[in-house]
Length: 414
View 1 (cartoon, rainbow, N blue to C red):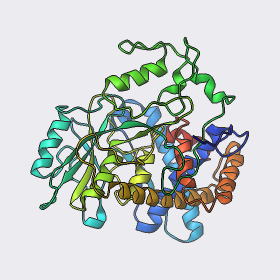
View 2: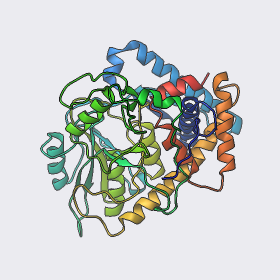
View 3: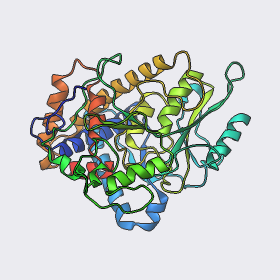
């Protein structure tokens, strides 16, 4: 597979962590600013209420970070004379067994349910939801376990709900297989310092790029049950034991990607029609925040299904689907075309949001140590402006440098 192999994501010798900060901060700014300008409504980023209750320091840092977003978006909107800024910090709905996040298809008159614990479902959908929420089906229940589910309210033709669609791991596709063929992905060269922490403690080999937990390869395993000698492989082993499906073998020449349940559900809802509603159901007891990560939020909003709550945590090695994936149920006749069209819509919005966000990152609002990377990302977008997939790919590259979006934004904005 052909990769961009530079020490920086967009530069020959730059700092990839700082460049990832800039990419994801610009994406968050552009998304928030575009939303406010278009809808004239406020936008809210949420913290898990369990964290808000237990960690005051973290909650204060979260609120301060959202205030930075608000100030930066506000200065831009005021300068453009578009709309006043209103970026708020709040809390997501509380966790309960089977609680849901929903993609709200407003164009079809779909509204968010009044309760995350009692969605209004079809008779068949309710039965499947109860099975998923009680873990009476085969699904992933480990770290970040949210199961995709589509309630099907069609009255003719296919009337069956779809699920469970758990987060699954894939290998980033090789070039030449897709239409359009995306901008080449970034893979750090072997002499990049990023590989130092991915060297296995005992074996001396390297954990492939993109693997969640890969930066912990030099740390001894924290638990049993996986046979791992280091924490990185232990994390992967726990995911496997928790039921995550690994599609394809990820080698040191590949990039591991993870497609979340909600994203899988949105593709399927489009295939089945506007009477279908995509959900993500909380399962397991490891991750309990009832909100969508920023990478999911960008895809959901670009495809017309904005989430009911947004958090600023991690979306490590997130990626969309590129080919039909059906762990349960048949592949629809137009499924590949739907994937292509929704991905194209996402690419288009990523470019819009990233360009807007970079414009917001003027010298008054960006920290001094991020200015050079801002200029480099801007230059890279300009140089590759004919490639409509470039912004989406830069976001995919940025989230392989694993970090929370709150931390990235906090480091980037004054």
